Image 1 (spheres, rainbow, N blue to C red):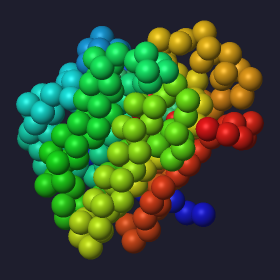
Image 2 (cartoon, rainbow, N blue to C red):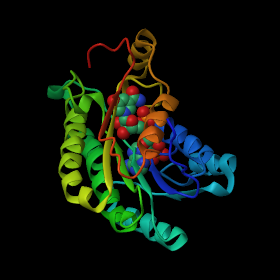
Image 3 (cartoon, rainbow, N blue to C red):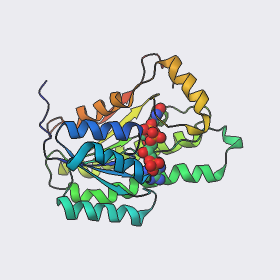
Length: 243
Ligand code: NJP
């Protein structure tokens, strides 16, 4: 199937300093897209710019901070005059049985996984308007479709992302702005740092996805003709038969 030529498109990728975001930046640049890399770890996104060259720009921000996000999108408007893709990928998961979980961790997850998506999406909409094939794609999770033991608050934030997109699609679809979610299962990344040994064992036993596998899904959706909305992609290791 012929994919749309993405040369010259402009994308903002949140959580571009590692994992899925980093892989997506590489793949989009290979497709001719100019990418804006957003994350808190400056040295990581600077290193990626050094690798990707003029097609990439690094902007440091905590996506939970509305003022910092506003600065990012003001800079995108100043440099590029608009935006074709917002990839809301920044996310955080803390693994804990709910009864023993720490409300400070609930807040950290809600700030990034939900407020981060809301702040970036609201700031991006005016820049996406009028751009053929414009798309908002946000990373939810298999845990945003099915509740998973010891990931209850994380699951709640990712269910919220799915519900938000379901409603937002109805607000923006008639304008031609595509609203899409990607729901990965287990992926080899830095995600799940507080249970890294358990995550490594699970990923090994499931033959987990690579970040590139998920990045390919994003590019597949984005490269469809502007009339085509790939509304939802649930992508998981074939051996991950339950959430
Ligand atoms: O994880 P990781 P993934 N402001 O830890 C950034 C979802 N997912 O690639 O700020 C701005 O390598 C952080 O950057 P930094 C998951 O929920 C994954 O797997 O420099 N950025 C880093 O670049 C998430 O939505 C799996 O620390 C913030 C990035 O987020 C997405 O996939 C399974 C930030 C995280 O990269 C990408 O995560 C699943 C903030 N406040 C869903 N906080 C999986 N890997 O198995 C964090 O179902 N970041």
